[in-house]
Each structure stands twice: as structure tokens, then as C-alpha cells.
Amino acid sequence: MKRDNLPPGRKEELIGKVLENRIDAAGLRELAGAVDEHDLSRIIQRIYDLNEQQVARIAALDAILGKVDAIKNARRNNYFTRQIQKGFRQKAGNIVILAEGDSWFNYPVLLSDVLDWVGMEPDMIVYSLAEGGDWLLNMLSARKYVEQLSVIQPDVFLISAGGNDLVGRSRLAAMIDATGGGTNEYNQNTWAKALIEIRKSKPIVDLDQSRFNNGIRYINKDFHALLMFFYLQYSFMIGGILKSGKFPDIRIITQGYDYAVPNSDKKFGPNPLRWYRPFIRMFLGHGSWLKTPLQLRGIPEKDHADIIYAMIYLFNEMMIDVGNEFCTESDKRVFHIDSRGSVGDSGWSDELHPLPIHFHRTGQTFIDCIRQKPNNGSQVYVVQKLHP
Amino acid sequence: MKIILWLLFIVLVIITGQEAHIIQVNAGDQATLLHLEFTDFAAGKKILDCWRGITYGEGTLLSLAQSNTRTDFLFLITYTLLLISYSNSQMQQERNPALNNLLRLNLFLAVLAGLCDVSENLILLYDMRHAGEITRYVSSSWVSIAKWLLIGWVILIWLISLIRCRVMREKRTCYVSV
Image (cartoon, each protein chain N blue to C red):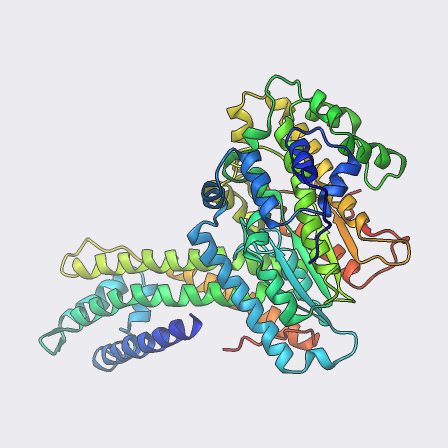
């Protein structure tokens, strides 16, 4: 895709401002139109203070997890191929979907994830590239979705990514200002502040201002830089698809997780239908993504959940803002599934993954969005709470 | 994966079935391996004594039963993995949340059934090793009953979901077939 050309030195100046969290919204959008893969690689190396090889190494998928993910994808994709061979595409109204993402799209064996529920619809088939534990960084550098977009020419492209870039390998600890002086960094991020101000006037989901303020004071410059980096990555990905001219009718649907709850409880209980919860929590990383990094930085436990609240709130607003950049009143092609607040404090299988019933509800919202169910003209579909 | 499991399963059914048939033919209908799983102290001892007294090849029926029970450790792994695999496949097609949850529970119950079978085999091997001693005998009937109930439940839930899929004429109507 052709990128905007900036005057000499301008791009470097804007990248420097992103890394220092001193860029305004106009500058960020200017940069988003100009960055290429090489720039993205340089930015993340600076955010993580690592070289390219080190970044690739920490972002690499665990080998065993990769194999388990591959089994689920193979099953899904074999089914996809069989349906295509049976003439699925010839029937009017049938929808072909390509999905790239993380464990919300591919949770091996134990949970029915979002794609499982979407794939059960009679008029939808899903080709999945999703891998639990995968980073947005990997997805962009591997570019598997680019190849499959060209081959499959899907009606809809689903993407779920960013969570592992934030919480994988205890990276969360590096995003924390243990002194509680992070409010200044938030105030410097005029783009993020503007997103919150806009949201206050045009609410999509409730904003608990006191929780947000309490959380934001622990969030340092690197998180804001990472948030803007996500913006650049998603803009690069979505812009690459929409502006290529190869997919004139494609719709893109993103999602932004819910307010995960840092904890390390094993949740043993008498309900046999929840047998998997202690199993998942004992053996699959529970506690290590959120709670341990926050403990590592000495954050009081009472503030843990508020930090994640602020991060997830901003992450969703960032996603919505990316979508807005590619939408007009008459031409909406980027949609967002907003799960904020839908799972609740007790609806989690582990720190990052909802119980199957909540995956079901999120999946249903994806289905509504894919079917273009009327939504008051908004490109944001909100996952309804189980118990409002 | 499933094909390999099915091949292994069929081969083991043939091997263990043949051995069980030999025991039944030589010891009678009331002294089969299945009977031993469910009997109490007195009847169990009687069956073991019977097997000890009948020669087969270079050993007795008791040694054949011991070999059969050892083979069963491999057999139980294959059927447990098959139950897990089919329940998991069906779970990813089951749109009814309650049945979806029950199919997820099947994954755990299948493992539990396999563990019951392990316990049963260990008990049977203990009993066979002490066949000549009057006081040493442990009945495996409770773990055997639990095992069969669990296997039955797992298959029942899977079948209900499978049939429901077909009746409802949903997509993915059970392309997995036995």
C-alpha cells in the first residue's frame, strides 16, 4: 500500500514524540498515514528497550501452545474447505470470514471461544489464523492474513489482538509507575485525553471516572506509547486492507476485551460444570499476566483492578478511534465489538478469559455485527451484560 | 489422530476380546472377566480359583487374565482419548449452552472414567496376584460400576447432542460419525 510521504525528518520527529508521549492527535494521525513495517519495528524496539531479535524472541509463541492451537485451527479450516467444496460460496447470503487473533479467538480444547460460536452459524464459515498467546506484533510481521485475504477474498475480516503485547512475558510491570505519578503522563497524552472527553459527551459504555482516575495514576509513559503504537499498527493493518483496492466490499470487525480482574484465586467450588476453572487456573498461567507483575511493582492490591480498568477503557477507545478514521457516515466498513463491563468481576475462567457463557455473548454480538443488525448507525456493537 | 486412535482401539478390542473369549469358553459363562469386575468376595475367589485350575498354553487361565488386564491399560487410554475427542468436537458444534456445558463436563468425566478403569485394573491385578490366599481379596465392583456409569453418561450426552444437531438440521450436523 502506498504510504503518505512526509518531509525529511518529520517522520523521525513524530516517532520521537510518540515514544516520549508528547504527540497530539493530529500528529499521531499524520504519522499513522506514513509509517511502514520498518518504522513499526523501530518503535517497538524503543518501547521495549530491546533489539529486533530480542523483541521477536519475547513475542514468539510457546511451541507447545502453538501446536495445540494448530490442532483447533486445522479442524476449523478443514471444515471451511469442505464447506467451500460443497458450494457454500455459491449460495446467496452465505458469509465467508477470515479471522486473525489471539486466545479470544482460539482457546484450545477447554473453552468454546468467540470463533467457535460464530462458526456454528449455518450461514457463516470461518477460516482461522488465530493462535492463543499471539501478539499483534507477530501477526503484522508474519503477514499470514495478507496471504489469506488475497486467496479467500472474505466478506468479513475479524481481528482480536493486542492483549498479549500488553500482558505477555510480564510486560505489564514495565507499563507501571509505582509512585502513582502517572496522571501527568495521561495529561500529556492529549490524544487519549480527547478520546475520553469525546466519550463523556457521547457515551457508549459507562465510564467510572473515579476508578479510571485511580488506575491512570499508576500508568506510565510506556503504556501511552504502546497504546499509540497499537493505534499505528491497527491503522497500518486496516489501512493496508481497505486502501489496497483489492477488497472493495470487505468489512473489518475488531474487539477490545473486557476489564480483566487481576487475581490468583484457584476458584475451587462445588459446581461440576465449572470443573475446568481450577484446572485452568492451576496450570495455564493464571495470576502471572496481571497480578504478579503488579505485585512485582509493589502496587497495593486494592488498586490492581482499577489499573486494568483504565488500560482496557483506553484500549477500546483507541480501537474505536482507529475505526472512525476509516468510516464516514455513508460508508462504514470498520466495526468494533465493545465487551467492556459485560463479563463482570465473577465471570472469568482465569485472569484474561471469560467463562464460556460470556464468550457466547461476545460471539453473539459478533454475529449481530456480521449480519449488520441495525445498531443506530453506530459502528460499535456493545456486548450486553448477562445480568444488567 | 482419530484414525490412529480408532485403529488402536479396534486392534485392542480384537486382542482383549479374543482373550476374554478363551477364558469364557474354558471357564464357563459364570467365570468371565466381566463377572470378576462386579463380583463380591466369595464369588470373586471362586472365579480366581477356577482360572488357577485350568491350564492354557504354558500357564493357566489366570496368567491369561493377568495379561488381558495389563493390555487393558493401553485400551483404556484409547477409549478415554476417543471420548474426549468426540465430546470436544461436538462441543464446538453445540449451540445450546446447557448441552455445550455438559459436553465440556464430558472431558472431565472421560478422564475420571479412565482413572476408575486404572483403579479397577490395579485391584484385579492385586486379586490375581493373591489368588491362592484365602483372605486377600478386594472387590472392584464399585469402581467398575462408577466407570460404566461415567462412560454411559458421556456417550449419552454426546448422542443427545449429536441427534439434536441432526434433528434441528443445523449446520455441521455431526459430520463426526462413529
